[in-house]
Length: 296
Length: 293
Image (cartoon, rainbow over all chains, first blue to last red; front, side, top):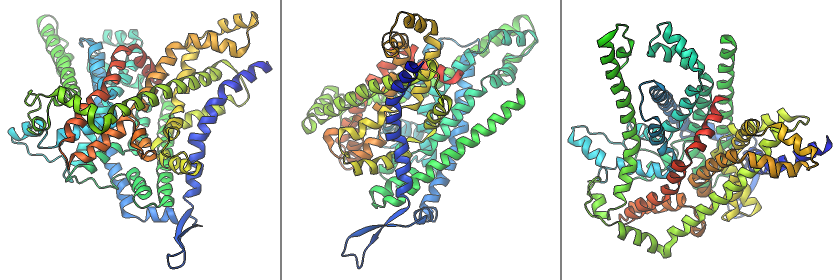
């Protein structure tokens, strides 16, 4: 018996040592740092010193319009992106799962392929496809009489949403499709015998049965959305784009640390971001957990 | 698209409707595939062009074809720094994913096969780790790394990618599916030690799970951008993602960089596409294990 406990400890130790070093300690260190500020001593001749400042960094971040606007952008992004992603991935999975679909393996692979493209490269490709001098898309749209500026203030959010959709639609589609394939076929046959059409079966039988994967995808999508950074950064570096360097909270934290060297503020912003993620994932699991009890 | 499947009449109209809806279903799927693939096709054709052809915007023609020239410039520019980045990416992703999978599989196996006090609480901590936003961690990690003095070294990018809580979760699922307890009991009766059993029986049986975790971690590290951006300033240590980003930042002032970025991007995507096409069974298994449970 003792040998087994020892073996379990040996097998778990490498993971938990790394886990502590890479996740637990940085979180603790961020919280610690967020409580300190750099102050110029005297008239600014004596260099800077680090002083305990309590929650000052948090009030500074929360009092900064740029930071709050970042959360506003994030909210707009989520309201736009999450329904499109879930509906799109679910719709495609249901189409693929319907008896009428052909060449399922090909469709799965082709739809999944963008996920193999690194996020930074996906963003580069799409920014080139948005740039009038480079893009066949923009010239085709212009030929069709549609003038849309992907870098304008109104255009930036759809531009970023489109890149994220392109990267994640197929990935989540495969998850939903796998869950749909796991449904017991006799349930579906029984419904067909009872006279239910394909549309009815999809909505009232298939959808409730794959709810746990819907919740999981929703949860990971929310957490992923909060981290929005790479795609807008590429747009920000593009010329004439309306995306600012503090467009999302993550970009705000990055700018605070590396442009302003204000580590306390950057740490506070990171902690607030992580807290938001924790609260949201708690809310999502709580809400869906309760509903599950009701139906069970 | 939906009305056609709702018909209840028999005979002829029904079969026509089925044909119609078959076209609608597959047509919609084809449209989705076109949306997914045309940026990749553009990347492929754009990589064959010189700067002039690229800026002419006629992407799907072969105007200004100069693939050889682009590859040559890619190899020459800055003493072939691009292929240095390529090797770095292979090293970070290959070695990192290998160690990470081993660590994850060992932990997942231990969670599945052994009972010890506080097990489920500890597993709960792992699941919490899945939910921590990694980019919110990158900045504190940078500050910590600068305290320890490893900023702008190989280790600053390498150590953080060895941890993947979701890999532990997947490994536990795989272990309960692939490794029967009887096999372990038989080995115990033969007098094998516990670690020996893991190494020569458990790990062997868990190989498909190992490959799955490896594949996902390899992709994640290959695609990793935020962490290297924060940690590295020495070009010699850059992975591909960061190098291409740096080149792209120059491209607005110097259009000669466009072909370098585009051709470099194409070459950077190739290994992942090959891996996903040839290892379909594994990524599907990984996604399924994550979703059905």
